[in-house]
Amino acid sequence: MKFLTIRMKVTLWYAFFMLILILISFLIISELSKKAMVTNQKENLTETVADGMRDLESPSSFEYFENGIYLMLYDKNKVYIKGIIPDKFSNEISLVSDYVQNIKSNGQNFYVYDKYFKKGKESYWMRGVVPQSQEDPIGFFIVNFVSKFLPIFVMVTCLIGYFITKRAFRPVRKIQETAQSIADGNKLFLRIGLPEGKDEIAKLGETVDNMLEKLERSFEKEKQFTSDVSHELRTPITVILTESEYALEHAKSVEELKESMLVINRQSNKMSVLVNQLLFFARSDNNSFVLNKETFEVLPVILEVVQEYTRLAKVEDIEISVNNNLSANLYITVDKLLFIRSLSNIIQNAINYGKPKGSVDISISQNNNYIMIEIKDDGIGIGSENIKKIWDRFYQVNESRNKTKSNNIGLGLSMVKMIMEKHNGYVNVESTINKGSIFTLYFPL
Ligand code: ADP
Image: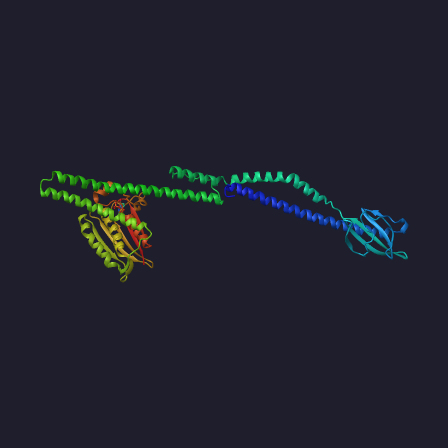
């Protein structure tokens, strides 16, 4: 059984149950027909005896054989008068009134029916005997049919069953072939593409296609991520190498050496920031990531972060304001470092992508479930075509412009999103190009 295909197994089971069903039906029919035949024979016997009794005028005119029934006449003392005794039937068998007996005599079975009755002044016994019939026409037909047609019937059933299952299993074969092609050739773009349907296999095909779609996308993202990381690391490494080579070979004074060291230091810092960010993602992607939660008052921490960015904002000629809508001192329990990091990333972006002489307005409020920190700028804004992509790792709307503005490399917002998810909160953005953006952080209380 192990080596058979499911198609073959289903066919065999189907044929087997079909066969059993047919045999059981035939058995039941033949039993019923046998029973009907016996009842028929017994009724015939009792009716013929009754007819014989009614028609009897005198023992001399007595008819002996009717409807296949042998009739015998006895006097009231059970002494045999007249009749025909069937072959093999012993006349010694005693007379019993009103009851069809099942008698075996000399290897042959008989039904025997005796009746005591009065005719005129005389009393008699009438006996009817019929050899039990061995032949049941329906049973005979069944045996005949089974022996002649059943093998053909089973073969036809098997063939039909095989073709039906083959048809039914065609989608499964398609799923298997697609999976095989993907495994053989790394062709993650392949799809099963079953026609739409409500049955389980169509649903399975659809689910596998969806899964392949997601796999392909995440595979592409992974590839993109690796290439982005290499790209981001290559630039500072190249600068460090050329600068150090230049310093070693051509620097003539301490000043020149210092200048080179400064460049190397800046690039090393950039690499260090990138490596730390990558480390954060690596840890966050891992399920073992644990939040280091602590309870603290929100407002002072927010004010501290804002304070840190005041100088940078001044350089860009941007004014930061904080609007506190909290009615009382509010405490939250979150990972403080990550809370600060998410807030800093959004404020830094608001300054980076703000316009000179512009403003960044931060407002803090609370509803039943969340503390909401809204950071609003009046800067370049984000087009609707990019609004979904800004959360992707390394995605920058305008890469070259962003690069010249800061050392950022497109990881800030994906980090914010990750931090919010880890806290069961979320981040929302509304933005209009050339008008500004509003980022809102929702931390659950
Ligand atoms: P980056 O390091 O480039 O700032 P982020 O992940 O923080 O990376 O942001 C992704 C991109 O989203 C940015 O490069 C920028 O194009 C866009 N962006 C983020 N914040 C703002 C904002 N406040 N205004 C306009 N564009 C923004």
